Image (cartoon, rainbow, N blue to C red; front, top):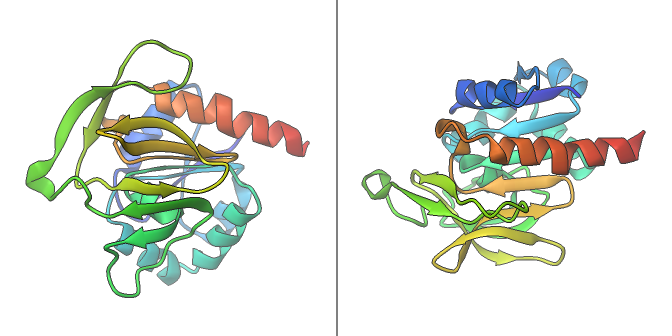
Length: 198
């Protein structure tokens, strides 16, 4: 399985390190040929508007949107969640997303940079252990559509969701040293989806 990390802006290295820790040999991707060569993709945290704009500059916005629509497994953290959402509240004027995930997200829902925080939350992956979640100018999910599973919540707001081949968290597991989310993406989302295609 070839897993790419979109390397336009954001915490790319941290996601690459997390995937390596899970036994995957990821590649940083930013060009059309690189996007076409991967089986699954991670959209890192960063600035969602900047990542969307840069994807247009690099000529891969429509390609990514199309591959996501056709079922490529994708995990998005924080800004990546916003980029996967079909609807964005408090969006900047003209802000685009790749879409594909039937959720409505609110940008910066937990507050500004100074309101960033960490907490332990339950994540529905079959483990009873809590997971450390770091929220940095994070979104939350205001509304989930049909077929979207809520995997974790904070104060009744969904912060981790899944729909078939798409996984999104509003927090940053890539900076905690806990690889459960990346492992869940690889083993429970991406691998089963790719096996169905074979």
